[in-house]
Amino acid sequence: MLVWGPRPAPAQPMPAPARPIAAPSPRAAACHNGLSFDRFLGELKQQAAAAGVSQRTLAEASPYLVYDQGIVNRDRGQRVFGQVFTEFAGRMAATYRMQQGQAKIKAYAAAFARAEKEYGVPPAVIAAFWGLESDFGANMGNLPTLRSLVSLAYDCRRSERFAGETIAALKIIDRGDLTPDEMVGSWAGELGQTQFLPTHYFTYAVDYDGDGRRDLLRSPADVIGSTANYIATGLKWRRGEPWLQEVRVPNAPSFPWDQADLTIQLPRSKWAQLGVTFADGKALPNDELPASLLLPMGRMGPAFLAYANFAAYTEWNNSLIYSTTAGYLATRIAGAAPMHRPAAPVAQLPFNELRELQQLLVRAGFNVGKVDGVMGQQSRSAVKAMQIKYGLPADSWPTAELLARMRGLRAPVPVAAGAAAVR
Image (cartoon, rainbow, N blue to C red; front, side):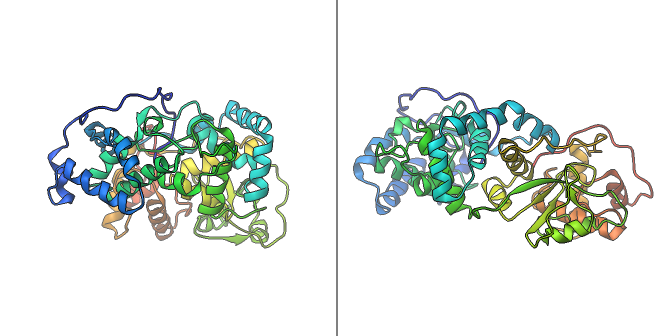
């Protein structure tokens, strides 16, 4: 699950090209001791054979194992999305998608019931990923998978990872699940209606319709069972436990905002003592079930209790906005009310000032990962630490006041309207 968002409709299987789509750039071979693509491919085929891939499969797949510089350019040029959580969730977890999810659960009730019994994953959780990843199979991508995988394997950015994904794709073919020309998906090599990487496809796909193949492109039953298997086995889902619930947090100066962090878990009884309630004002259960307070837009935005099962969402896609949206959509499909919108627009730093803030955090000694204007977990943790230092509400949300303090100014500077990068 490397990429997400709307994808173009899948194309019909296409003839394999006879030669590379575009010549590799000079830097592509830098991590392969200068090997040409053809020699690199020869070694990769040897590794696949050593991993058990048959010569018959290698011969069938060979016409599709060609280099495409356009795929590599696309990987290196991924754009940052400019939406905050409420905007992204409003679009991706819209009412129509909730209704489609509920309809799919009714249409394939037997498969969903079987999956919940065998794996403990609720139907709404499976349906939410199904809807977000491909609109229930309508948008799976239209690019030849083997071409994408081998191109990214030859490129040096994530070579080892995609070499493994290429071999896994060949194993899928060897097992008889898909043919090379059927392998059509996203530009990053993901396959099927819930966009599995080939390693996940090979490991977790199950034959739920009993036809002898694990077909995640065309069989809804296989999609449902395989997705449940991956969530339960690969992502360690806890049977019978919640994943995300919207809550109401008292906006009081005494509230310990520094406790709002996915790395911090408190019993629900403790959150109740601090004044946290369900979104409708009802009291939280007075129990010891651990939960984290998640504020995707700081203390002025929506608030959620995230439980141990929420880790499955952040493992599926480490974008906080995507994972929170997926968890929220699942609650909606399961019958939860729409989340409460902020009473007023949440102040949001523009992209260039988020990058500046990250640069200042790096100068202050923090590791924020890549300085790219994307507020990931490392950046949010650094923001919280500086908020604590300056005596500001430590909700991990980057503000104009924090940026002004870190610039050495006494008062916040005016901030132009803008949107933060999504992660």
